[in-house]
Amino acid sequence: MRQDLSIVVNKTGNTYVVALEGQLDTYTAPQVEAAIGKIIAEGAMMIVLDCQKLSYISSAGLSTLVEAQGQLSAKDGKLVAAAMPPAIRNVFDILGFSQIIQVYDSVKDALAAK
Image (cartoon, rainbow, N blue to C red; front, top):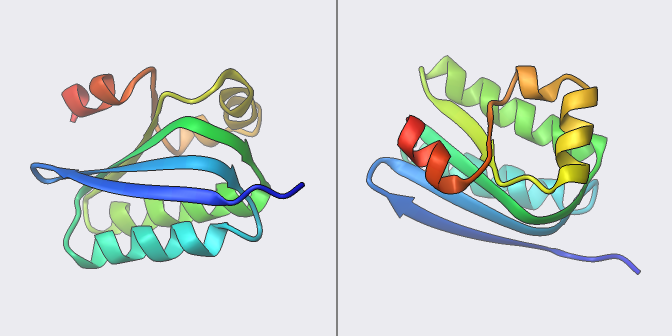
């Protein structure tokens, strides 16, 4: 059974926290791309992805995140991830994505490190 993705955006100062809940896959990646694109267009320089409730990520989802990181880097901005479940973090690490997108243990840690 396919699960949808919930995206909740909160702004803390100049930082946006994007909470993802559910599956980030081929079907839901365009939603994330649109949400992050809107935030970047609003002038965001720092985006923290709250992955605590992310249950699955596919190659399409990973590609969307790397693309967003590239867009922010071009503007001297940054996209980081936080609170990844162990299975998602394992995929990130094995495929080398943690070399591209910095991962923090918690949203609090990510916000403190900016």
